[in-house]
Image (cartoon, rainbow, N blue to C red; front, side, top):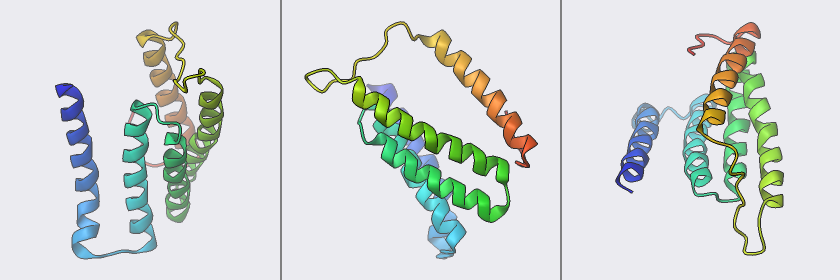
Length: 143
Protein backbone atom coordinates (compact mmCIF):
# COMPACT_ATOMS: atom_id res chain seq x y z
CA UNK A 1 0.00 0.00 0.00
CA UNK A 2 2.88 2.35 0.72
CA UNK A 3 4.22 1.91 -2.82
CA UNK A 4 0.80 2.75 -4.28
CA UNK A 5 0.52 5.87 -2.14
CA UNK A 6 4.02 7.02 -3.12
CA UNK A 7 3.36 6.30 -6.82
CA UNK A 8 0.05 8.16 -6.66
CA UNK A 9 1.61 11.20 -5.02
CA UNK A 10 4.56 11.18 -7.43
CA UNK A 11 2.32 11.05 -10.50
CA UNK A 12 0.06 13.75 -9.04
CA UNK A 13 3.12 15.92 -8.39
CA UNK A 14 4.38 15.51 -11.97
CA UNK A 15 0.90 16.29 -13.32
CA UNK A 16 0.60 19.46 -11.24
CA UNK A 17 4.18 20.48 -12.01
CA UNK A 18 3.44 20.28 -15.73
CA UNK A 19 0.39 22.53 -15.36
CA UNK A 20 2.02 25.01 -12.97
CA UNK A 21 3.49 27.47 -15.51
CA UNK A 22 0.12 27.95 -17.21
CA UNK A 23 -1.75 28.23 -13.92
CA UNK A 24 0.72 30.79 -12.51
CA UNK A 25 0.85 33.00 -15.61
CA UNK A 26 -2.83 32.63 -16.49
CA UNK A 27 -1.85 32.05 -20.13
CA UNK A 28 -4.97 30.07 -21.02
CA UNK A 29 -4.59 29.86 -24.78
CA UNK A 30 -6.44 27.07 -26.57
CA UNK A 31 -3.22 25.05 -26.74
CA UNK A 32 -2.41 25.45 -23.03
CA UNK A 33 -6.00 24.74 -21.96
CA UNK A 34 -6.12 21.57 -24.05
CA UNK A 35 -2.77 20.52 -22.59
CA UNK A 36 -4.17 20.94 -19.07
CA UNK A 37 -7.21 18.87 -20.05
CA UNK A 38 -4.85 16.18 -21.36
CA UNK A 39 -2.93 16.18 -18.07
CA UNK A 40 -5.98 16.01 -15.84
CA UNK A 41 -7.80 13.31 -17.78
CA UNK A 42 -4.59 11.34 -18.36
CA UNK A 43 -4.01 11.30 -14.60
CA UNK A 44 -7.61 10.30 -13.89
CA UNK A 45 -7.53 7.65 -16.62
CA UNK A 46 -4.31 6.08 -15.37
CA UNK A 47 -5.45 5.75 -11.78
CA UNK A 48 -9.01 4.67 -12.54
CA UNK A 49 -7.62 2.00 -14.86
CA UNK A 50 -5.60 0.67 -11.93
CA UNK A 51 -8.85 0.51 -9.94
CA UNK A 52 -10.56 -1.30 -12.84
CA UNK A 53 -13.25 1.38 -13.09
CA UNK A 54 -15.35 0.82 -16.22
CA UNK A 55 -15.51 4.51 -17.15
CA UNK A 56 -11.72 4.88 -17.21
CA UNK A 57 -11.99 4.58 -20.99
CA UNK A 58 -14.09 7.74 -21.13
CA UNK A 59 -11.47 9.71 -19.18
CA UNK A 60 -8.71 8.39 -21.43
CA UNK A 61 -10.87 9.10 -24.49
CA UNK A 62 -11.14 12.77 -23.48
CA UNK A 63 -7.37 12.86 -23.02
CA UNK A 64 -6.88 11.41 -26.51
CA UNK A 65 -9.31 13.84 -28.16
CA UNK A 66 -7.40 16.71 -26.54
CA UNK A 67 -4.16 15.07 -27.71
CA UNK A 68 -5.41 14.93 -31.29
CA UNK A 69 -6.29 18.62 -31.17
CA UNK A 70 -2.99 19.66 -29.54
CA UNK A 71 -0.88 17.67 -32.00
CA UNK A 72 -2.94 18.95 -34.94
CA UNK A 73 -2.56 22.57 -33.81
CA UNK A 74 1.20 22.07 -33.63
CA UNK A 75 1.41 20.22 -36.95
CA UNK A 76 2.77 17.06 -35.33
CA UNK A 77 0.74 14.64 -37.39
CA UNK A 78 2.50 11.48 -36.24
CA UNK A 79 1.57 12.27 -32.66
CA UNK A 80 -1.94 13.13 -33.81
CA UNK A 81 -2.23 9.70 -35.42
CA UNK A 82 -0.94 8.03 -32.24
CA UNK A 83 -3.58 9.81 -30.14
CA UNK A 84 -6.23 8.77 -32.67
CA UNK A 85 -5.03 5.16 -32.45
CA UNK A 86 -5.32 5.25 -28.66
CA UNK A 87 -8.78 6.82 -28.92
CA UNK A 88 -9.92 3.83 -30.99
CA UNK A 89 -8.45 1.46 -28.39
CA UNK A 90 -10.52 3.22 -25.69
CA UNK A 91 -13.74 2.21 -27.47
CA UNK A 92 -12.47 -1.34 -27.86
CA UNK A 93 -11.37 -1.48 -24.22
CA UNK A 94 -14.69 -0.17 -22.92
CA UNK A 95 -16.59 -2.76 -24.94
CA UNK A 96 -14.19 -5.56 -23.97
CA UNK A 97 -14.35 -4.79 -20.25
CA UNK A 98 -18.14 -4.65 -20.41
CA UNK A 99 -18.18 -8.23 -21.77
CA UNK A 100 -15.65 -9.48 -19.18
CA UNK A 101 -17.75 -8.70 -16.09
CA UNK A 102 -19.17 -11.58 -14.07
CA UNK A 103 -22.61 -11.64 -12.41
CA UNK A 104 -21.25 -9.66 -9.43
CA UNK A 105 -19.92 -6.94 -11.75
CA UNK A 106 -16.28 -7.85 -11.12
CA UNK A 107 -13.80 -7.75 -13.97
CA UNK A 108 -12.59 -11.23 -14.93
CA UNK A 109 -8.90 -11.01 -15.79
CA UNK A 110 -7.08 -13.48 -18.04
CA UNK A 111 -4.63 -15.22 -15.72
CA UNK A 112 -2.41 -16.35 -18.61
CA UNK A 113 -1.38 -12.76 -19.39
CA UNK A 114 1.74 -12.14 -17.32
CA UNK A 115 4.62 -9.74 -16.83
CA UNK A 116 6.49 -11.11 -19.87
CA UNK A 117 3.49 -10.30 -22.09
CA UNK A 118 3.27 -6.78 -20.67
CA UNK A 119 6.97 -6.10 -21.26
CA UNK A 120 6.77 -7.44 -24.84
CA UNK A 121 3.71 -5.29 -25.57
CA UNK A 122 5.34 -2.18 -24.12
CA UNK A 123 8.54 -2.79 -26.07
CA UNK A 124 6.71 -3.50 -29.35
CA UNK A 125 4.31 -0.57 -29.09
CA UNK A 126 6.96 1.85 -27.86
CA UNK A 127 9.27 1.05 -30.76
CA UNK A 128 6.46 0.54 -33.29
CA UNK A 129 4.39 3.62 -32.49
CA UNK A 130 7.50 5.72 -31.91
CA UNK A 131 8.82 4.80 -35.36
CA UNK A 132 5.43 5.36 -37.00
CA UNK A 133 5.05 8.73 -35.27
CA UNK A 134 8.56 9.77 -36.34
CA UNK A 135 7.92 8.59 -39.92
CA UNK A 136 4.71 10.64 -40.03
CA UNK A 137 6.49 13.79 -38.86
CA UNK A 138 6.56 13.44 -35.08
CA UNK A 139 9.37 15.36 -33.49
CA UNK A 140 11.80 14.57 -30.69
CA UNK A 141 10.68 10.97 -30.32
CA UNK A 142 12.40 9.50 -27.27
CA UNK A 143 12.21 5.73 -26.96
